[in-house]
Length: 150
Image (cartoon, rainbow, N blue to C red; front, side, top):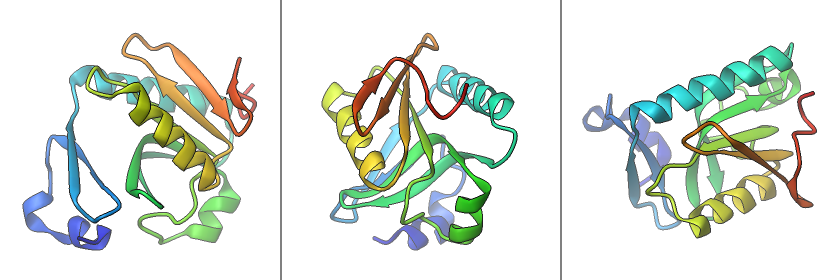
């Protein structure tokens, strides 16, 4: 299945969970808790308060070699938005990609997403745990704090 088919399918509209595609085009579904939505908002708000320009993207679809992955929150600069405007999914990851980690996510799954987003062009990947704690990653590995916001 292709991403555009998923977006246009009336059967897949308004689902209470996140959809991604694996590298074979099969749909992966993850239910989201209310806490997940709260964390998405909190992270987006933090980025928005620290970045005076660019766009916050909730549920940002990104084409990767392992299929379409959907960052829970992303931040894209104005330059990124201008260059990739209209793409769905993005072929390049926005500068910051954030995953809200739930109990159903394995460490291997999160490590794979970090690698995929960074290899698609993200400058940082953030992992937010269920209590709101954030870990930051760049191509150099885990970093103590974000270099993209200060």
